[in-house]
Image 1 (cartoon, rainbow, N blue to C red):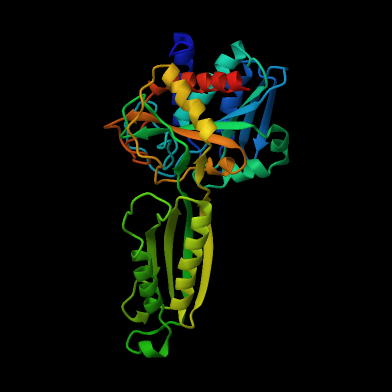
Image 2 (image 1 turned 180 degrees about the horizontal axis):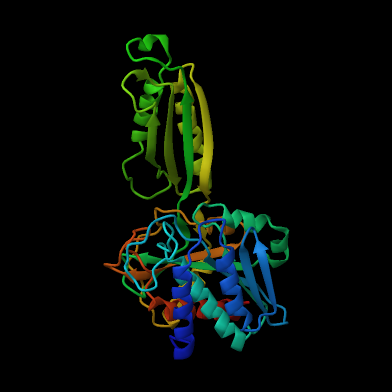
Length: 385
């Protein structure tokens, strides 16, 4: 296979599609128009099946060889971020306060490009599932897809995904067996006491001591540690206490804390420890704890990672200098608990703006490389089947 399998016309069409997606971003759980745009684009390739409304607004496009063989899934994300874009691009977001600042528009274009190739060349055996997943940014979408009865007949034998990575040489690929991204969860702690006059604080029940004790406990895990089995990171993201007045001793306080580890089991233990600390700090106050944005760890299967590595090598794609795993979380982790998966990283450039920055934009030059690596990975899987 040559390094680029798409024609100039196809690359132009994918670039135009990416720009159209970029102009019309939708946040997690509200990606209906995005899914419809992708579905319309790929229906023209003549897929054997199109499934909509998967786990919300998810979309699955299937290309079947009609011959026995493995089911291989390639995943992209549909959702954008609730951040105001500051790129000044001609195709910048037209939705105030919402933008594709993580590159999901580019990931969709790459997986759609694989669809263009499959429309002309069905797999030699088995079937290929192109999944456009909702709600990746909240950690809810992959589990919603997995729990959707429509997905049961699609259960793949292999699943692959990529994420662009600023700070790594443009077009390079980094992949490895084992942890690829962290497990994480957001915890909201809400203490409730009793307000009092600021001159008589002893007549009320202030949450300040409890909040202070929680902050001290979290601070023990706030420094970045070496990545390894014992890795634990707690980030204090938000604090709020009382009302903005000088005459009232507070009754209510809340804290938002994000926890990260390298495995789901480690996260469960870490969460239990921090919650116990919060309860011990309450000292008679009411405490409510709610969980948000829960992501499973992404664990790359050794065989799946080897397929990607061989594909990149066969195409002459350079290896990226990137220390796995990434500290951020990826909702692809829910699939890694269900099948053999590999998440790899595609370099966006050493000086490219970081993910989630308001000046970030996905590099269009990555589209043909991403499509070729996915296609070569598929061929490598089928050769071993």
